[in-house]
Image 1: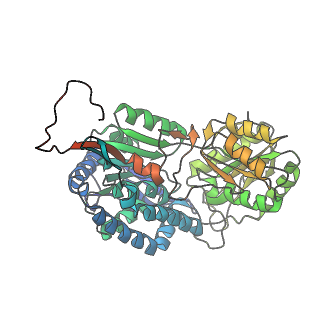
Image 2: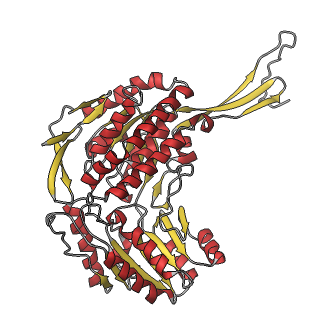
Image 3: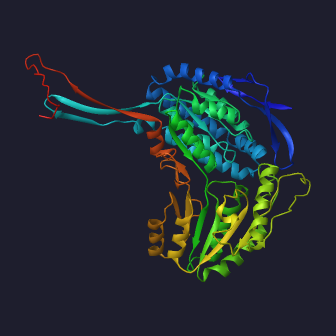
Length: 498
């Protein structure tokens, strides 16, 4: 049985603990590997290695850092297909979707290659007589990333390229459900010339997470996952005096107005709802049909859902693969059951679907529910599976109010041909990322990713300019170089400019 180890001080290591967790092939339901689970001593060793490596990495020149980043970018690009296959094998998503994940992660690496420009400070000459003032930013030290199963390459790459480019050292705790991609990325960093200890991977569960949250040598924590765990990470790490960005769950709405192109809209929403089997924090799981849009839209959505090809992720003919585990499958089915009991109409039913030759796989077919109301569990909860619900309202104002009443505020979209309606929507919703005729509005790497309300705990989003700000802290220097011929008289009064 293949064992997935840690990566500490530039080498694979099984660690000192005996605990293991199963890694499944979601398409077959069979075990394909086991991953070691860190004990506190393993995390301590990784952090100690990072502290030592950080002493020299923080002092490295911007040119030296960017050379490593450019080489890393080329290596990731060359390994994109290999990484995509690895993600598909452990996560279950189709290979083309996994390849897109790698590409979006690569864009953050490209952004981080511009770190010399991003870290430029400010300089003010002669702010007072013979006094100049200037600012610059420095790295925090050891920073940690705790990342989810749904994007094992992209989400960590929202974090570690920017952190490392800023001069930090990084300890990654990936999901134990699909842990192998993190090791593959660690080897690419090493091939790029990154010094040992600057990037580490600690496999594990709550033991590893809590050790990182409490560790006195960890200065900051980045997290992506469910809202309850995001809240926990923010509170525990914050209580330990750490800087924290914790991205939580989502209930992403798409609002469809009657003037939208229904065929185009239905195709976009189907892809956004069922891509990666709905296991995306930016998946559109709730569509709000306004007025006369509803009947035609539901009919088009049903036709699109019926056409989705369900199959193993490594089969080129598959549009949608399985969910990550049997427990995830059972939870999704239970949510559909709940919606049906509470009065929703099951227009397309994905329960009980199987794939020939892969009967043991964790498959749920595309599911469409109509007549959903905000009080139903299938709407209130983040399903995180291929379940698309439709709610009906009469006006755009009602749609905006419905979106704003939801506790999540990650992403949303509006489909319309009317610019004034789109502008009202984008200004009126209390959501961090908004699409106009774009169903999954994930910002490019030179913007920052993050939601509002229960979708984010902390005050900074990931990657982009806010990522640079998160992984650095500022210094302001006020300097005078006295002239011997013009001695400065000291004063007891509070200093002012002259």
